[in-house]
Structures are given as C-alpha cells and as structure tokens.
Amino acid sequence: MRRELEDPDYRWFGLSWAGRPEDREMRSFLLDRLRENPLTRREDIRVGVERGEVTLTGQASSPLVRRSADDDAWITPGVTEVHNHIRVVMIRPAGGEGPQAA
Image (cartoon, rainbow, N blue to C red):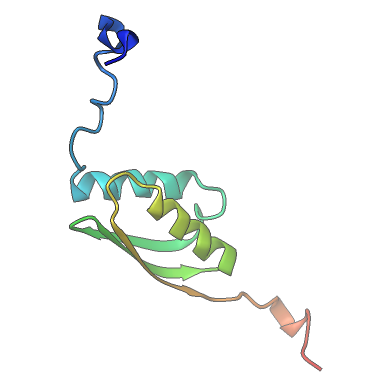
C-alpha cells in the first residue's frame, strides 16, 4: 500500500459507494439529472428502476433529447441496463408551414 493512503486524511478514499445504491436512490438521482438537463427538463419522460435496470418511457421532441435521457441513465451510479422506450414526436409548426417533402 502506498504511504499516502495510510495517511488518516485518505482513509475515506473509496468508501463512498461501498455497495450498490437501492433502486429508489437510482431513480431519484436520475430524475434530478433529467430535471437539471436543459435538453430533458421540459420533456414528458417517465423513469422506472428495478434491480438496477432503468426503463425510460414517454415522449421526446427530438432524437437528441431521447439520446440525452439515455446518456443520463447510463451514467447513474448502480445502473446495469437501460431500456429506452421514449418515442420521438416531432412537433409540426402551426398552419403546416415549414419544410415539406417534394
């Protein structure tokens, strides 16, 4: 063992996540991340966690939002699998204006 780790100031090192977080803790952490993320905060995204597996459902306004929610789920501590069932629903401008296929 390196001498620095024997120092009392380093005894805490590596102890913060001694075990896997519970499902409710993972869900809470992920919901906080989704609320703080500027891409996902106004989207209709629901989160379920069971035995470390996250299931995302709901609707997103773009593929980028869907991917951002997926990324947030994967970086949540304790997550072992992510099932992303978020549907992308493109919002059309009022009056049918905007890009049209030829």
